[in-house]
Length: 416
Ligand code: HGY
Ligand code: MN
Ligand code: MN
Image 1 (tube, rainbow, N blue to C red):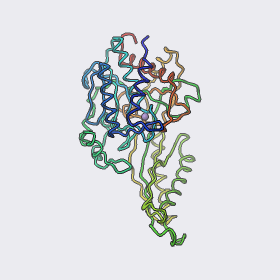
Image 2 (cartoon, protein in one colour):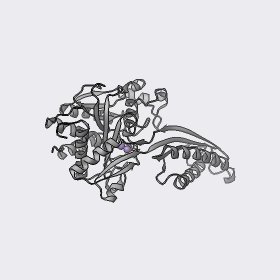
Image 3 (cartoon, rainbow, N blue to C red):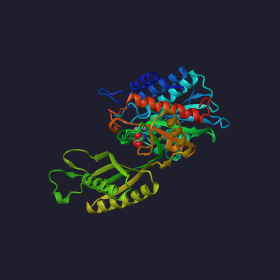
Image 4 (cartoon, rainbow, N blue to C red):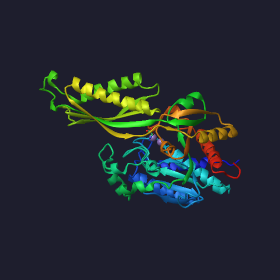
């Protein structure tokens, strides 16, 4: 039974981690940044050295293929992959594992001359973390990109997508041309770290993902009145930050008590204006995120939070505005792909359990157009989106071998 080379896979994980490496460990590698573009060039070199055909589409998605030179509807491909962009001060496995394990699988399949009826492709999707717009590259590939919004897409620091892509040599207004021809993809399976504690706490080496949460992001703005922080009597202040803080605490309580038992919410970005210690904040902006595997629950919570914002604004005698920023749709993974992963795990003697993904992934876009699934491996301490994100080498090897044999079955390989 063919198997991946763990030393080769871990050496590539270490090599990729050098692009955007932080002095204390971890990595910051924003999509379209110089570190990301150097990583893209390195990845293309590794794919070519492994004997794969490579191409990059107008949305910046990178592909390495065994059996095709471009998408061909007459020969639908089995696709794997993930992303090489990261969050700020992120870990070295989020995304990177799926891309490099996919590359390792295709390299082993070529080295062992294992014949497969369907072509195999490994992808690195652009801006999965959504610095400019969530799951950008896979949305474009699946024909789900709203091209009319390209000009307004921007990072929280104000950098516009159009400018970031131009800096990397891409025309953002052509991104929608990345839409794959109908029928070009037969199925998709992505290997990813769980980024949470469940598999490790259950002592189970493989997660078979059943569903992926939807993520709703909104900018919530409170506008009060800037005033002198010393001379303005407390009862007269219309302090935008205190209103925002009140809103955040009330929303958290609401989502925990009125959401589903798996609804979560977060306020990861807070901006106060003018932002001086001796000025009462006249304006406060929150980036508010909510997640749930059920679209209806997310919809209901969004309406209830808007009503809460109006109530808080009244109580603090100021104005509130909610600007939707992005919303990804919860996805069900393909029963066929899940069953294939489970059967492969049984053959490999790997215990497995089904679970939903509390993180968003490119697979949730692919799941809207083809049979798609995900394989999870445990995260040490459930840690992710932090520099000490890590998984055991043995867990990485088990996950990559489960991916290898799942790809062989889906690609109808000779000895699958
Ligand atoms: O935020 C997420 O769920 C994923 O890591 N992009
Ligand atoms: Mn990820
Ligand atoms: Mn992530």
